[in-house]
Image (cartoon, rainbow over all chains, first blue to last red; front, side):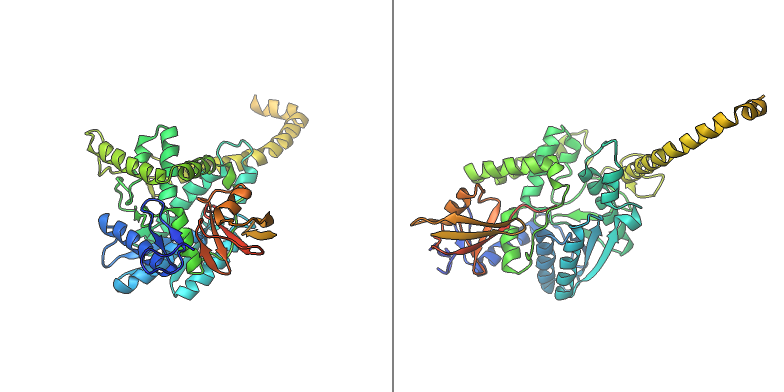
Length: 341
Length: 67
């Protein structure tokens, strides 16, 4: 039996970097210390923050909500609200919503649920089924609309900061994806605090689990009875992230510490990039001319995608109407020609 | 001489037991990575070096998120 390096009880986790093992009690201490260090180091929260925790109902976001709620005992002026975005994925989101509601009731946290159907006009299932041109992967629509709704809703309810449960694994996966896409502007935005864009409608976003491995959030969730079931999004395996995640996990298995090394590399790169003269750290961004939300362009990505979806719908219905029009034109050819003259 | 392994959300599998078998060996027999699963026995989280016993029932929790 492997024993806790601190108290000698049975260990539930071993850090493959330090070699230290922890029993469940000391694992929670270790986990809490790491997250609090990130919060302190990057000044993620202020004493009077209204924190909106973006929760999906999965283990990571429930672990974050649980952790911040416990931590709020020491920051009594914090207000915490849980926010869930219902994308409309049948057989998946409906199950995690139930889990989300059980946990927020148990923790006595205020919560909000917003849906793609009500806010965007389509469920993700509908978007995928009508996206016959297959221009984008489902994760593209989902990510853009989710970020859009989280910011918009957080602002509506008066939040000063949005906390997301992105962990070390998520961050380095995104980093690799952006390297593949040669997208340095996105890499600079992978810091623990969102930025550098500035806009009066943009709510600050922070990642308290930035230095926490996904395996550690899993152990935290199991110990705290937050991991009660596993559902996989039916679209998840279509994404590039899925393959990168597997590749990184295989590397970590062969060479423990790889993930931390990549995170440190990312932090160095962000540091180098922000020192370059042509990168403005406090970059002001535009306002979308259609919805008034913050946007890098005249029309934000959410309105752009929404417009494309409307066009797809129009084209589908126009296809039928065009047939009817052709019939009408053919039948009334002489009349139309006469009118045109 | 078997160990029953329930992978949450995926199904139940049986793995042949051998003396001195560890959690990591069970994962390897199932072709799984230890970075991708947390193993639980009778409600207690086990680390990869923990020995398993004949007849154990293990529950595997996926580390990778479903979304």
